[in-house]
Length: 131
Image 1: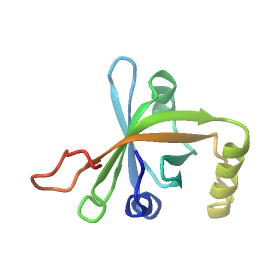
Image 2: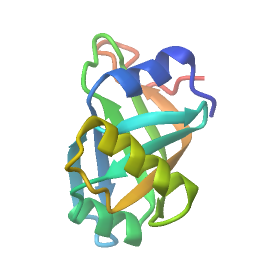
Image 3: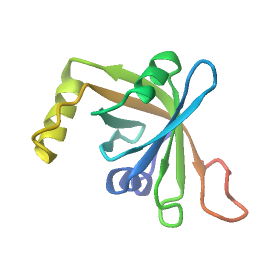
Image 4: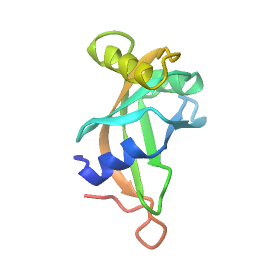
């Protein structure tokens, strides 16, 4: 799935919520302030304080991200997450986070490969896949 410019702006400019599940099917949702597109198929997330979310991704990489403002940015992104604790993408997350808040010390970079996008706009098209 290729994200549009509007979708990528929604991720970068709005708070998003990241949903994960454990292997036992126990859900977890957290607000994410450090999320931005890498390109039109991937989302970069800084792991600054994750615990259950991180454990869930390690067990089950399938995730969902939804934008906070469903009226303005009505998108749900589904995909698979990969964790990076070193290397170029990790160093990029550390620099990004510390430029915003010098006291932050990210534990990892998480890259979500977007496979599907769905509408969460209230109304009859809610839940429809966006092509």
